Amino acid sequence: MKKEEVKKFFEQTDIYFNYDYNIKIRTETVSDFIKNLEFNNVLDMPCGNGYISLKNSKNFKQLTLVDFSENMIKLAKEIATKQASNNVSFLRSDIYDTNFQPETFDLVISLGILAHVDDVEKFLTYIQSLVQPKGHIIIQNTNYDHNYSRLIRFYLGVRRLVGKDKYQLNKVPAKLVENSFKKAGFTCKTKFRYNQSFVGLSKLFSNEKKYELTRKWFGSVGNNKNAKLGSDYIYLFQKN
Image 1 (cartoon, rainbow, N blue to C red):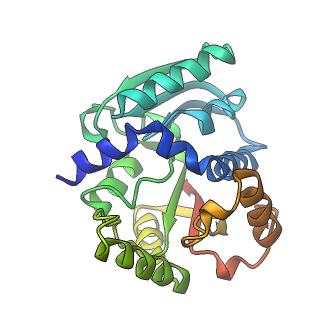
Image 2 (tube, rainbow, N blue to C red):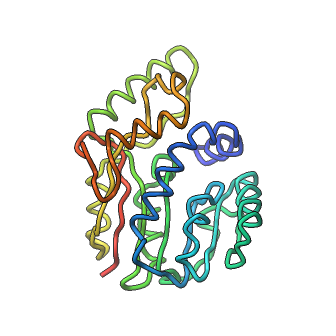
């Protein structure tokens, strides 16, 4: 049931692009993480419109984009065509129907998914298994235990009460994610913390202004200002 709700939401590309300032921040964060690295075989799952990985594909010999949204895969193909990316393959599939072999990739990118999967620990175990020794995973999580997350949940709870939002995001503490990777033999190389929500004020600002405000307050990977105030974590893990 949850999977069908998520699929329905992400087929609506107009809703997705209301947050393109956040896509820009994630794209730049991935670029900062991997600026001195090169990868042979990269998986982005779920890829959305593929923008984040495609904009960083100069660091990849081969890139595989996976998403269960037909509209998102269509957009990814359009972006790849525009930038003449010939090292990209596309797969419209559910995460667990991909049939990838263990230790296939030296980089897995998985952003914006932990809030939506049916079983967070199952998903983490699966993507961890896909990474080669010394390989990397870039993953995002909104820390359930953070005070800003509590404020967001209160705001969303009010919206549900008035019938505007019925969908509920997963409650994933940062410690759950970090402990999972530690037990699986990964080391956290770096992380970037920020907030992607303006708690009901989003419509007051353009995407350009939201980007500017987020950068002004939280900086970037090399200078993550006010990191403790950030409820969203983007991690770079490396397999030992």
